[in-house]
Image 1 (cartoon, rainbow, N blue to C red):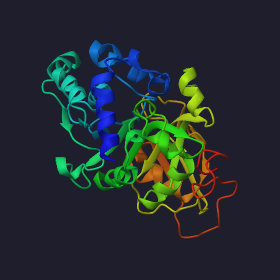
Image 2: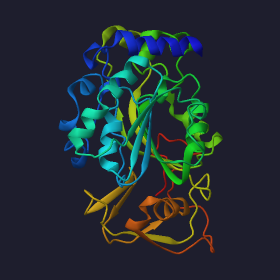
Image 3: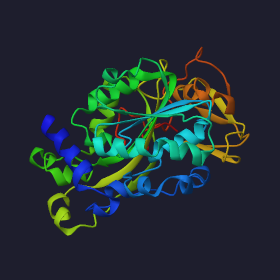
Length: 347
């Protein structure tokens, strides 16, 4: 574990000086971000952009006034974007173990405050390990939203990471992260190769082990919001890892105590009212749940809880409760079966 951590520190602190130094596209395969995020990107300092590594856009809506934590924040790009979205009544915290990355993030704190037109900075950067957030003072039930962008794959102790996330999130809080996944377990000798690990490949989460790990650490239901297969674009690395299929995925999960390990039918119906900014016509909870504005949708108990017992509640109306049970939700691909036949969500 210590060897892998030191290798990752070396790779991201010394070897990589910009995204141009990456040997594959895994750590920089970014989807087109939403309009509200695109509007903020020109306000971010150039050096932060150049030293940003990520595989998605894990910034969910409705962040105003919320406290957000970015695991493995690097030079702070997503932290600063989140801080703008959270506004002066909210805050954003970044945690990273690499000295060079944190120093760059902190260097621009005052400049970014001025660029955003804030009276005081609402960001905080902390050097530490995402497997042990308690040691840097992140308290239980203190965070509204946890994000991470292509970092959890680098951790040699992923179970500790997900336990820590569950601990620090407030009840109803959201985990929303993008990372690299793979369709099989990678042979152990390859997992300690510093380049393959640093390129976010051989530490990638095997999808079925990820499902099992989430259940073990308290996350009984999670949803994929986006899945995209990756090309390595490097013949030498392809020769070593061509036997496996890698994908970039964005995951949404909530800290809710009433979730079940499969989707159950209680006859509940949900309506989306269309008031989430930038989502006037529909809202995608995940890649299997598109809520059209003002159209009733039959949902399982887990989905009903996700839209009524979280910060999304103001955008939804849910009819029905769990007083009557109608069995398993029909046509439901659940997280305790294969996630490859669907999103891992119901309906």
